[in-house]
Amino acid sequence: MFDIAIIGGGPAGATLARMVATRMGEKCKILLIDRRRLTQEVDVGSFRKCCGGLVAPDAQKMLARMGLALPKSVLVGPQIFAVRTIDLSVGLERYYQRFYINIDREKFDRWLVSQIPDNAEIMDDCLFKSYEQSGNGYRLKLLYKGKIIERTVRIIIGADGAFSQVRKQAFGEKKWPKRYISIQKWYKSQKTSPYFGAIFDPEITDFYSWIIPKEDLLILGAALEMGENVHQKFELLKLKLENFGYQFGEETKKEGAFILRPLNLGQINTGKAGILLIGEAAGWISPSSAEGLSYAFRSAMVLADSINQGFTGLDSRYKRRCRKLFANVLLKNVKSPAMYGQRLRQLVLRSGIESLDVWE
Ligand SMILES: Cc1cc2nc3c(=O)[nH]c(=O)nc-3n(C[C@H](O)[C@H](O)[C@H](O)COP(=O)(O)OP(=O)(O)OC[C@H]3O[C@@H](n4cnc5c(N)ncnc54)[C@H](O)[C@@H]3O)c2cc1C
Image (cartoon, rainbow, N blue to C red; front, side, top):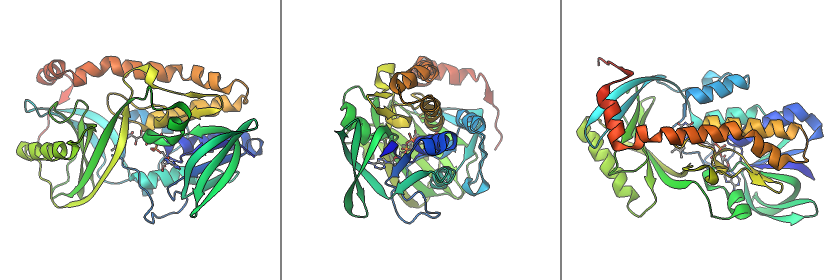
């Protein structure tokens, strides 16, 4: 029997596995499950995480706190020092200084998994299907190499992202953060753009869209409200940006994923009764920028600290220790009107406060 089974080996799950395995050694039997082939060095056509692949300052700070430095193998060009903020509805734009690390997200996730000590058992290419109560723990049903297999565990950790099956099966569909469909298309580009583009336009979405350069490609992405017309909205966005001066070459890839936006603290669920949630599965993600890596790391770190003090009272200890994270999400929601309230945003953009003069 395992002490903990972590479902999902993304940034949250891999961090938790690494920290618990390092600190507790053989005292805690860990099983990490992911449907992706994260232990293989090269991607061999399994699922891929759809992501912009920017490590924002908050996530950089978390890497520093965890004593991790990025290997150059996970970096991609160009490295970015400014955000180009565009309000498409009135054609306003401003540049602001921000430092991002541009990464290959698949390589980044593989590198995080490679940091997990050997005393944690990793089963990748393995799909979590369901669980049932068994004695004082749970029996997991997993799809592995075409067969359903079972594992018994004491505690289940859902680190399975925005479409968490663990959260859905344990806590139902109610009180989830607002769910968006994000679409990303990759285009060949003639000219490398040195900026992260953040695009606001209520005709496209009440959240935002983005442009991220990756070597000689440009990612155009948007978090779109659920509905039938998401593809038309995406094409309209592209057209509007072309009219604004952007040039998109041949499309080389398209991908999609859900992305969550916690609009109030009741939508964040840290779990209970031996089933705990971290990362985006819990709803930990910035409601203003959709930056999720720092929240994945922080929630994993808080849970690892809580586990280190034993399993008794773990659910409430973890929730209590998340208070700074709750406060952080609250603050981001309080600040949101400056970005998402049209009038206030346009006022800020027109004022030019804190913006950079850019010569191109
Ligand atoms: C389009 C897009 C762009 C984004 N861009 C950025 C960005 O640039 N910077 C940033 O900080 N954040 C970004 N985010 C948010 C960020 O990607 C997430 O918040 C972050 O990855 C959450 O980490 P996580 O470990 O909680 O979940 P995930 O990274 O989603 O990892 C979940 C893991 O669980 C596995 N899994 C899921 N279901 C199962 C199952 N049933 N069985 C087994 N395994 C399963 C998945 O394979 C995956 O490895 C973006 C999100 C999207 C959708």
